Image (tube, rainbow, N blue to C red; front, side, top):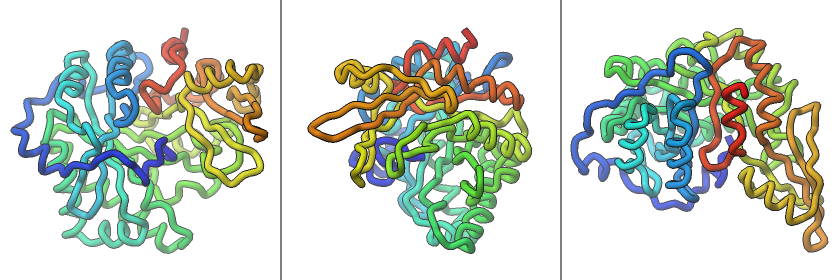
Length: 355
């Protein structure tokens, strides 16, 4: 997941989880820990950067659609240490979401590379220490569980290392989910879309067996470090949905949609700049660029020039979401997600409601 700003080079201050633990015992778990009955289930991430309070208000405005919000707050920086981003653990946000009937399942990422994570996860004692640290995080506040978004570990050109990550991560998920369930807490995992050999560091079948929900990142088909193109596409969705529904129970699958876009500068090696939907539309209007919609992928895009350089922007809006949602229905998947609160076209909420 190429979460903007880059998830592996965050500039926000980190605070040790132990500081959060010293703040006092967590109150009892609130209501909203289970997906709402009937209709499409939906979760969304709340970023720790930018206007956090605006993202929080966004969640409250759409409480009737959301069953879960995952603040993007934590990072496993060693086998037994979990650190919090600036503002992590804000009780006002946690309590406000619970009061609105929304479960709070924070996201934890990791910084350890493939080899180090493989060694950790295949060592029973170190794996247990890692699970202990994650359980301490959940107990530090009135959290309803945890979402693991472990991606750094999947980056390796060594097939044998990727295989050790795959088997090790399945063991980690088994242990973590089992202990969370014993505490009546949710266990969620976020994974890349698995197609054409991509995402092979994740054992969909076993993760789907242990976790309550498996969130598939339905974005960054084209990412900030690659060639310009749509963030998502119909044929890509169909391919990963076919694989996912063949290995994971359908009721556990959530497909997360992008609420953002990338601005590539053609003819350079610079990474694309991140744009929220609102920023993309404002840029398009300032540049006087026509709105174009690629019917093949189901994605809006436009081009413009600045300072003698040609730019190409691809992003997602409500029209694009409406174009892709029927594919989920075709494969019997009702769960949806959004990356991220405060990024999206406001009209996507009506699209998710089927309006």
